[in-house]
Image (cartoon, rainbow, N blue to C red):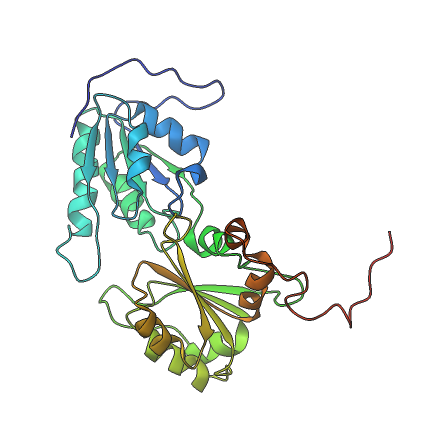
Length: 287
């Protein structure tokens, strides 16, 4: 779709979008307010915006009049454009002298295949800029009241994907190593293989009673959060009708949601000041 053209004023200190360039930008986990200023600047200057399925439609309202909005979304189990075709589309638009914004959900370099697209641009001699975005494994969890790290629970966090390029559960992941080596595990695109993944983690030494949080439609008004356990998470998600896209978090940080669910508090939820039950054993810092 295209809209009538108008002159766009560039805010002071932000870069000018040059013709023939491609900006690879992250749109964040959903909430339009989580866009970076660089991404918004790109939206206001781009001649073409090639966007993913996970980009919230309200974000597209910021595209400048006269620009082309080109959908290139990929969704599991549905007819989708091939990655090679998307990259070639970016190259073709850039060679036509257009200012091309490639807008991807989350962060383009966190399970977003932004690296593949950027290398394709390098091979074609197309100049580009990378604009990081807030990834769902951090921003989406924060909107659910689940911190990726907390000093009373974890000093490490592992991010992994629930399927590889074939659509199968990743065979290259050392599941026992992940189970034993990371206090918190955050999983993208894991719903399809959640039963098998949870089984692997339990076999690797994780407790079936370990807390699990599943965040669906992260940061949006229809966000849905399921608090469950590693041993029952797949069955509980199926019973609750939880569907992707979703982020799955495994670890004690999930317990903190009872104290940090700020979105729930806006709807009347009473928060706990000591969700981990540590007040009786912790020494209070003086001063």
